[in-house]
Image 1 (spheres, helix red, strand yellow):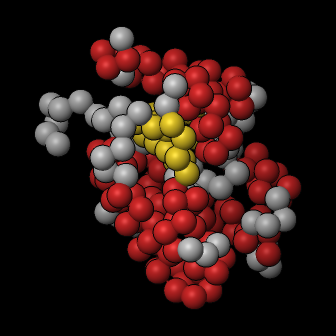
Image 2: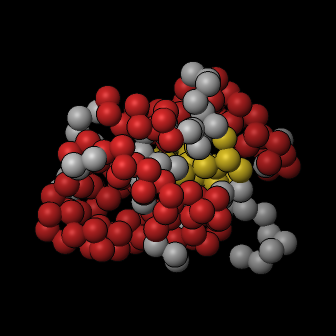
Image 3: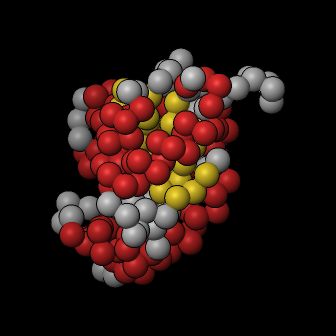
Length: 182
């Protein structure tokens, strides 16, 4: 795709776990009349096992390889809101792939908000670390520059409901894709 070609008509949501990618993404897809896709669900379908088992069997590097291949398989997707895994940006080759696939929005609430949301879900692996607060802080410090480099826009979703976030994002998407959605 050359610099003059328009982005495919997709919206990709990136951000740390607990930022609301799935919840807001489903609402946003409904508002835009797009399909909703979640890369974590696509990974589970491809691997035929849950994500914790993938990590047990092939480690993080193996998981990231599957995640990257799922991203590659989405290259021909159109009119979709795609929720991505929080660590997808840690593979350098994934950042240009994300940006070529559509309009990338980083859901970016403050660290304290993320931590509170993560701690409400006891299935999150970070809750099982010796110091979850420090783990969240350290991972965010590593990932924030990656999210920033991948995103076309960032959006703080901490002071709005998921419905309000989806509405605001739908307006941003419509403005971004003005000619394509008319």
